[in-house]
Image: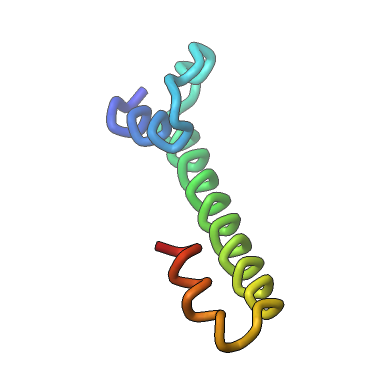
Length: 72
């Protein structure tokens, strides 16, 4: 198992890898790491879109200050 690949996967999981991950090939680790990164990016995009939609409920003059407060 690739040390670099497992380190990247551990970083994506934000925790130590379970022992069973030791049986994964470097290619499988890479696929899993890429899938986790893609999912996180998708979630972040969805959250940003939802926040922007929610700001539409705020009066137009207050949107700028509210946006600055929420998204520092």
